[in-house]
Length: 136
Image (cartoon, rainbow, N blue to C red; front, side, top):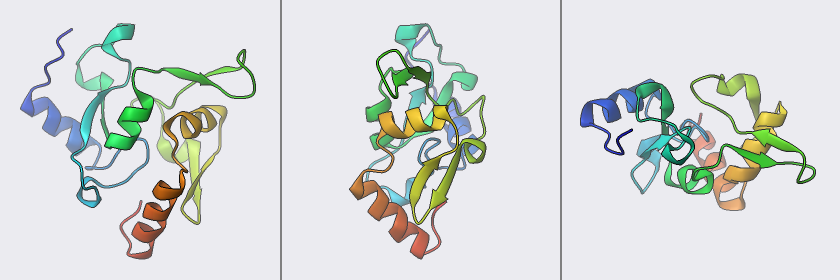
């Protein structure tokens, strides 16, 4: 399980994601910082660097997700897995209302919470991008 991800794999992941963060759907062109290739299941948890386990993530989503696979919702016993961009369809799990990402499932609620998808700065950015037709 190498940590190294080749240029070819990076390009394939970016193209598969249409150059958008696979968690918040912001386009890489609309970010001041370069996007990162993220291990959906981290190396720490036994994930590998194969294409099926890699996702394109903006720095905000990647930093907030870290190596996590789950979070809790209502209580510490209410552990819920996070959205998996290779196994699930984003628009089946999330909706958008006035720039706010709304959970349609418990997995989406957990992901919104952990990745802080609706923080004020991120909501403002999405609304501005929506206004000029750049999101989603």
